[in-house]
Structure formats: structure tokens, C-alpha cells
Image (cartoon, rainbow, N blue to C red; front, side):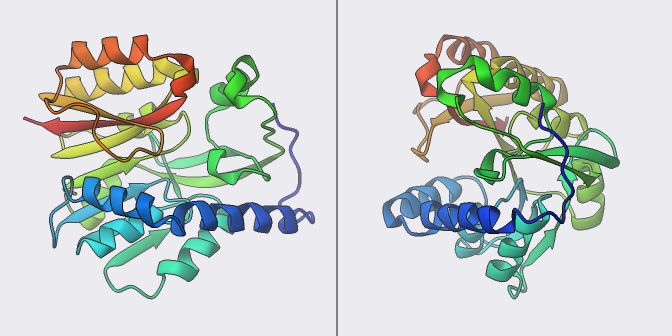
Length: 256
């Protein structure tokens, strides 16, 4: 587990460098951006509402905005949130909040990976599991901060029922869905082969909320893997059988 450090200690330069890398990866690849827009256009209509949970530097928020949607974007890391606010803070169709999302309103410990803040997490289980997987070797969560937590239910009460919710919170996805008590039209959640149990719990949670069918996008493909959407038991089998080298992707869920 990462050793706590004071938030004001001088690691800001390392974090700034890492955020700069994220901006390069997520904003300067035109082909990736085009793939993302094509996929997101299947998820949220023009004039619709999208929640971006775990927005990081806001590339998905940018895509939703390009598609003419309204966006509520949440990012709990204060330094990353500053970048998000600089990029999107002037847009009149976006609400930006420096908060995490979980099962209950309150606070949570955030394990910060200064060198790679895109995998900072509120999941102690992910931090503990990382050394067991080749794809996660060398990752260090070197700081802990306390962040405010809201829930999807509270966000819906404040901003309305979203057409689409994107959840990318590094192993904390099931906790986010525990804070939702009503079926929504469409959602996506990130999965990793490091924590398949989290993804399976998310599928089960959505199946409890409503009749959903599922699809899959691997890595940075930003394309649905299947022409025909899958029943819960089929997506569960696929997630269980993915090779470890697949590493990560997003499960998409569509309400029938």
C-alpha cells in the first residue's frame, strides 16, 4: 500500500509531466479521436446528457461536447481537475466537479500514482493486486489523499437522468454502481483482466437494476467488438475467457 505523503510536498513537477503525457495521448491522436466520436455517437444523442465519471483530462467529455451533448464530468484528483477545468471550464454545456463517485456520499481515500495519474484509484484492492500482473509491474501509488464522494443517485437528482454514463475509475466501478438505484438507458464501465471479479460484479449489478444487453470494446479500440449485443451470461463468459494480455477495455450496457 502506498505510503501517505502530505499533499503539498513538492511532487508537483512529476505530476505535471505525467498530466502532459496524458494530454499528448488523449488529445493529439486524430484517429483515436475519430474512433471515439463514432462510438460515443451510438451512446448519447445530440442535446442529450452524459455523465463522465472519472473524467481525467476530459477526452471523453470533449467527445460528448463535440457530439452536441451536455456533460457532467467528475474527476477527484485536484491537480488533474485543474487541467480538466482549464480545457473545458468555459464551455456552457458542461458541469465540472472535483469529486469521486461511490456507493454513499462521504469521503474516500484516493491512492495517487504520481507518475501515472490515469491509474490513480479509490480501490485498495487494485493497488494490492497490481504486483501480481505483468502488465502492471512497476506501478507505484506513492500518495494518499482524501476526496469527497457523491453518488449517481445524487447526480441524477441534481442534473437529471443521463442518456449515457461512462465510468472509468480504476477498479472502483462496482462501488459507483452501488450508488445507483434505477436503470439508465446506457452505461459503460472500464474493466481490467487484473480484476475480472469487479467487472462480473458490475454486470450482475446492472442485471439487478434492469434488463440489459452488453457489448465490449478492448483497449483503445473505441469500437464495439460484436455486431449483436450479448446477454449477461454471454458477456460474463467472454470476460472470464479473455487472455490476461487483453489487459483492459470497456463493457457497454444497453437497456432493453
